[in-house]
Image (cartoon, rainbow, N blue to C red):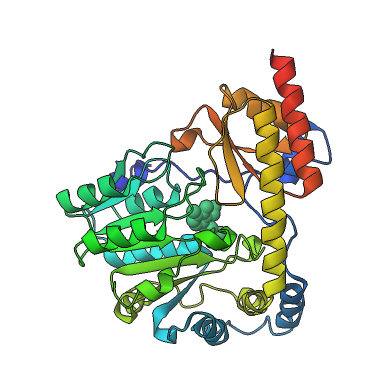
Length: 365
Ligand code: PMP
C-alpha cells in the first residue's frame, strides 16, 4: 500500500502461531498439542484465576490507568519506586514504548542476529534502522561486538534478550555489567528478561539493582511465561524515573486492562506456583534434551522454557509433526532455516512430541 511510508512497507509482519482450533480444522484431526509459543503448560495460578473472576465484577469501569495496585506489588518485590515502573500490554508493548519514546526516524539500533523478532519490528515501525550484529559461537549474543557496533554507529538503543528467544542462550551477569560499563550513558539498553524466572539459582543476577548505577538501563519482564498469563497481556519495565516518564508519555492511557492488573498482582504473590512451574520446566528440559540426544539431534542448551534443535528440512518436519498432532515453531525468520523450536510442556506432551519426532525421522529415512 503506497499510502504508508517506505519504512512501514518494508516491515516483514510478525507471524504468531495459529491457534489449535484453526489447525485442527485445517488438518481434520483433534487432540493437537501446542508446544509453539513458550506458554506455561500448567496454565495460570489458581490465585490469579480467582482474582480475575473477582475483577470481572467491575468490568464496566475503566482500568486504573496508572496501575497503582500492580505497581505497588512490584515496588514491594523489587525495592523500586512507582516512578521506576511502566506497565505494558505484554512486554512487547514495552519494547515498542521504548522505541517510540526514544527513537526518531533515521536513528540506529543494535540487536543480535537470532534475537527476538520484535526488536527489529519496533525499530522499523518508527523509521529507525536496525543493525543486526552476528552472533557469537553457539548462537548467543556477542556483547563485545555489539558494544563496538553501538559505539561506532552512534546508536540510540541496544536490545539484549537474556535468556534469548529462540536460541535460549544466556549472558552472565559480569558480561552484562562489563557491557554496561563500556557503553556511553547516552545509549539506552533494553534488557529483555522475559524468561528471567526460569534461570536456575546459580545463574540468577540482580539486574534491578544495576539501575542505580546505569540510568540508561531499561529492564523488561512479563507475566506471559512463568506466571502463565500470556492471554491477558501484561508486562512491566523497570528504569530510571526520567526514562520511565518518557515511556509513559507515549503509552496508551489504559494499555493494561483491569482483569490483567488484578491477575498479575495475585500471580506475583503466588510464589509456590512459579516454583512448581520452574521445577516442571527443569524436569521437562531434561526429558526433551535427552530425547533429542537419543535421536542424534543437535540442540542449543537453553535457559528458557523452550529449546531449538537442528533438523535439516525444518519446513517439512514442521508439517509432518503437525500431522502427527504436535505444533512446534519454525524459526527460519530468525535466520535459522534448519532449526525448529519446541516449548517444554507437561511430561505427557513432551513424550508425545518426542514420539512424533522419532516417527517422522524414521519415515524420512
Ligand atoms: N521477549 C522475548 C524474548 C519473548 O520471547 C517474548 C514472547 N515471545 C516477549 C518478549 C514478549 O512477550 P509478551 O509480550 O507476551 O510479554
